[in-house]
Length: 372
Image 1 (cartoon, one colour):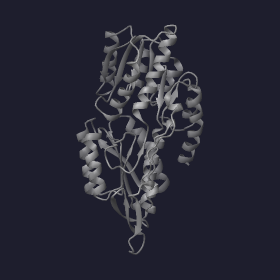
Image 2: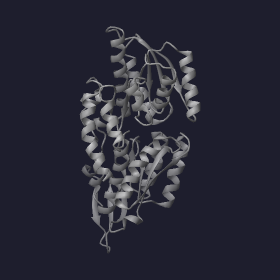
Image 3: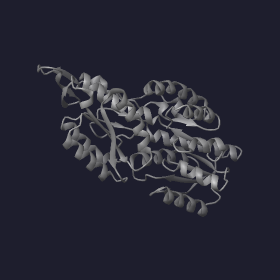
Image 4: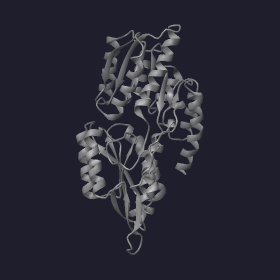
């Protein structure tokens, strides 16, 4: 039932994404250029080993997996490895994971490090390889560090994919998520349009960039995309880059200090993690004059947009990513079909919410539909 609700929302929010936030965002115009799925590669093959029951030996992209397709779902284990499980974003991934677990009876769970270091995530995956779950999905903190351990899991015969954040240099069997460089471009393009409105067609202004995950794949990729756009305009000045690490109180203090140091900024460009906290800061200081645009829709972000303290934010279908990751792994284990692995990096993973569509999205949220 949860998946049916989520899938129904996908169509409605795709429409909202088209009507909201204007039409300048590259994500709405981008074609689906997903990589060829594992099922279409010449290396992929499946063969019945000839043993009794549902036992199969399946080769996908040069990796061999020994499966028992008749295995009871309650005996299956699928791990989704996030970068930092102490971060609130992990709980939104967990919603999708638990929805799939409830539907199938499989043991699906979110695990990961308790800080943002790639080494912590590496160790978690290494320990999982020892326990040998039926499948692993990784939200990658750093491609260079995590790709080797993903390959180790594959070589150990554990089907392993990426979700939310990719490791393209690894042998991962698929990736479910968005292009974070493009997502960074979309946010910067939105800010550029708002600056143009503010200064009667001239693109200029002071911009503060904020994040909670400097050094991670997702933050660095979004930063690269945003800076690529900002650097096209001589009139835009990046006044500071704030990595608001720590708990909410520490993050709030870091953002507040940045605002005190730069009270006359025109815009705040959020790369992730700080949108809800920045909205609280804007409300506490009654600031509606700053163009505040970024990523994530959790917490009170939608309410702050509705109240005018935030300008716009961009979601990425977190529930669907997490649910879909478990679904791909489960389908492969129960069928042995390499076609279970499909690339799913599509434009509607970057959908914008601003004053033009926030009321509709809040109504969806209040009806119990996962938003994020």
